[in-house]
Length: 270
Image 1 (spheres, rainbow, N blue to C red):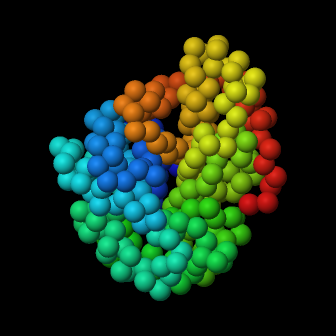
Image 2 (tube, rainbow, N blue to C red; image 1 turned 90 degrees about the horizontal axis):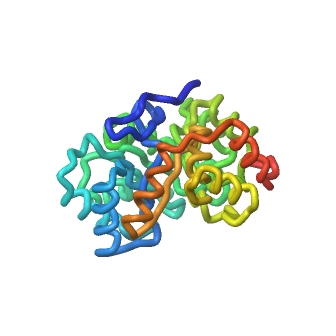
């Protein structure tokens, strides 16, 4: 299944997340809270980000909502993602209602199960997620930190695959078998913490960055986009936000992408 869609109006490439055009680069809000989170989101929106990623566990949904209320951008131009922590199993609808109220939204673009409840698939919660989507409260539903086996278990029980699986993903985590498994199931692979697990001083990244006259950070973000992996990046500083977003315009050669792939230390066990 080809998840590629044409770029959005802002030029950021998108993927098909359950029929909704999901920008492949988004603004993450953890661990910012309060006024810092509100100002950072407003700055990110002014720079050109259109996807804003938060979570119940981040305790900043209201601050993010304040930014969404203050921006002049229409709601239809924004892609709002939040996540339900697994300790809310059995309280899915209440958690969703609280998230919507805090964010000041009538609907979410994407709602994720933050991680597998107790290591299990969370089928009961997934059925509630499907119901919320059918009722129009959520446009797309997905998961975070799920293995292939757990995703298949959700599908076996409900007939519905997640639209998105958000996992820690960077050059060191690169697992082509896992990425291919997501692609075959029509699941958009989304990277959280794409820089946290990356050695930005690795000679391969340093050399490639030098040749493109960019930072190793830029190279890692561009590498994800070359693989059609969505990335969520966080910064409270406008200049860093702009540099991160500029990765959209950076196309790496196939040889450089392959060289970065070679930095993987992942063992296929997802």
